[in-house]
Image (cartoon, rainbow, N blue to C red; front, side, top):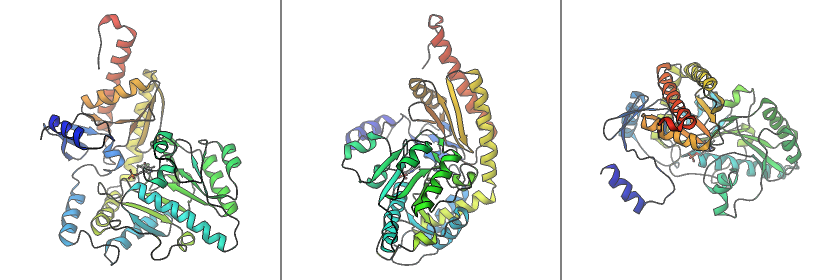
Amino acid sequence: MKLEEIRAAEARLLLSTYERSPVLFVGGEGVSIIDEAGNRYLDLLSGIGVNALGYNHPVIVETIARQSRALIHSSNLYYHEGQAELAVRLAERTGLDRAFFANTGTEAWEGALKLARAYAGLKRSEGANIGTKFLALEQSFHGRTFGSMSTTFKEKYREPFAPVVPGVEFVRFNDVADLCAKFSNEVCAILVESIQGEGGVRPLTQEFFSEARALADSTGALLIVDEIQSGMGRTGKWCAYQHYGIQPDVTTFAKPLAGGLPLGAVLCTEEVARVMHAGMHGTTFGGGPLACAVGIAVIDAIEKNGLLARATEVGGYFMERLRSLASRHETIVDVRGKGLMIAAELDSAELAKLTVAEMLRRHILINCTSDTVLRFLPPYILERAHVDTAIAALDEIFTEHATAHNAPTRGHHHG
Ligand SMILES: *Cc1c(COP(=O)(O)O)cnc(C)c1O
């Protein structure tokens, strides 16, 4: 089927949850994704932060081939080789003790929320004064299932599905006074992303993060950090909270964890883990042999190829180039991020949308989040030359836009 036929068929057959860009991808290699005509697109989004090693990476291809010949699925009723091996790697890299494997980000986050409620119940049974409330942050994004959605800020994600899970209060982002005012013994967990992803690549301040840790410690509430977008090395460290010297009680991973296969994980301390008993939580598919084998291979490839240092180095260069672009284009009002989790905020939602489309036309993939924020989540194998290509394209788009905008009579209309 060709693109137009597929569009028509999907319009008839699928729930309309996405406004897809009009492009049909059939392959990929390295930093490039390839359309049906053979055009290569520089992918600076990597499947929304998933394809950490890029496309068609030999380690991933070979691991899938080998493991799929051996065993794809066996269920969590029996042992296989992958979960403990992956768990030990994740424990070492998160500073936490135990793991539960799920399939997706939202499912990992549901596991974290369930741990928090159950752990608070255990503490109450041991005489502690601790409630059931969650404090989440404004502009947060934790996923689309009921619990995750209920802790996600945007009303348009929650309202159509009301009533949502009760017991969630939102704190103003990075507002320490609001956090302190809303925190009490009623709270069982404070929920944060170290760097908000969908919320516009917004890092927590050190002050806010430290205060959240201290408040949780003061009552025995948990600090739960969602690293689904920022974790697994994207920011140059395995967890973005490590930039702050903060240690959470619970964290979640997903997006890049298995290099493109669905896999999520919730990790917690030994202390929190003692609440979980056989039968309390589970999954049919989560932590299957195939996904775990690839997860192990991805972590080992990141180590072996020095990709954390690369994310820091190439990410730093990317931000530097964006800052210099910002000095020439007033439309860029902020450049922020860490490693290869980067944003350029524009002064216009219309221009942000146009920029994504114009980049696509130039065969470069980026996206726009929070209306005005251009977001870059490239694969960790990105090189400086790719950054230069992207910056040149952005420069051209902003220059053309400014020209068309300031001197419409000269006839430079684009887009
Ligand atoms: C993407 C994301 C999720 C949800 O992950 P899914 O795999 O789409 O369910 C949760 N939290 C954060 C921070 C995310 O970026």
